[in-house]
Length: 548
Image (cartoon, rainbow, N blue to C red; front, side, top):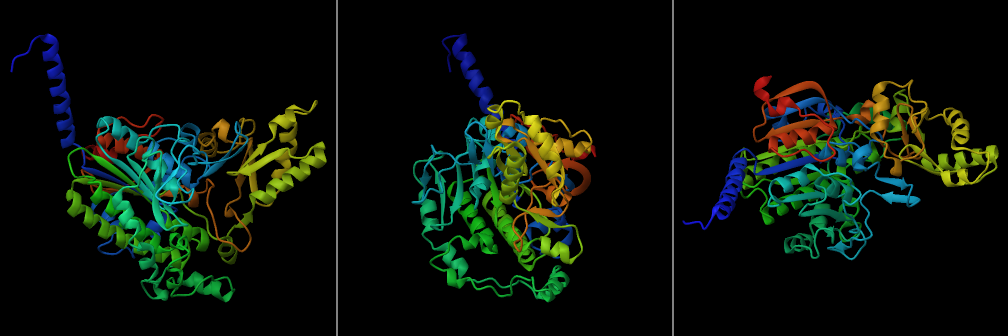
């Protein structure tokens, strides 16, 4: 081959270098990365169910052949679903990535903003508005975004979850697709942010009446009731009249309607897995040496946990079924992608508190607080004190948002005046332990870890004026209902973290790591730049096992 000049030769050499570089990197990267988030899975489940994981289950496989980090925690407040999914995949915290809650009060727009709502996006795949979503409110890149950049956008990235936020936030801005479930029509959908037309394979999946067939299975417990770890507590609670359900649960009556119900059953996880497998096959994820990524969030455990609580047959049975389902899914990956050619991690976006009724029955600290009622009470006491109505805009994400514009319009009244009166009043409320000014004025007597959680969760435009720290065991809800999460207590922040597959060593560690360490660790394994707002550290036990 003859070249006309040095410039042409340089271009050819540059292209050859790029091709060789991509070839070399292909040898040190997995074909497919599988990021698994189990929505509302506290680390405590790993211990309580350890003797119940199936011999061929996915969690058992990860424990036996992979690496477990036994002391992984969330390092911010509040501990809600959107914040967790964003933090796992950005390696950052709400103060930087901007996802300060499932929704927040936007101080510029002066109204509530849902985390993934986007009026510019339209639904693709159904006739409802459930697809008017995108990742535009996420302010930094994710690992998936960085993988796209590192592969010159040739690697494919897809997010899938029943919840829109669980499918959208993990794969960030440049994903090939994110899919979530439309509960009104019983279909998997997306938005015009990603594409203008739903793929034909998705249409085929949606027309198979998959939801109806799963309803037809009903819900029987896998094992006898007296073998469940919750049995002693549930037996005691049934004597007190607060046990909520009996088995089997009939689901056949929902066939042809009530497509939202499946989200709060183990079949919701099954539906998710079947859609994930269809996506991997039809999109040919992991089919070549250019690494792809699929982020999966199992939403159903969260719906069940909110309704029945962690000490319930429902949650335990669903977790045991998910373990078995993951085992079958991993065997599918071995066949489809190749054993040893895929890399997976499993974690959670947050934990969960005990149902207050259970806590009280067991003589544990517990109780209920309700944001709407608290907001009303705050406005009432402020009106009495200052003669003004509407001084409190909102109580959301365990924060109080004041009407600063109204305060500024009143002579001889300052924000400090309102806060100095309101904080002592709030700290007298039964559910509240401490109240912290988000301008940093009175947090110095709190433990440094708690101060850091508050700082890491504060993004001015999307945060309030006061952070409420609830007492241990208190949850936001209504009397007689289920439970929730969102605090900085161990039951909400301690999460599992398992690694398995491509170049993952076998072992475990009690080293304390944060949720923000997942993204930089994955980035190091993939030989790509960490996400733009990343503040985490590489977990060297995973990346450099020979040094430990």
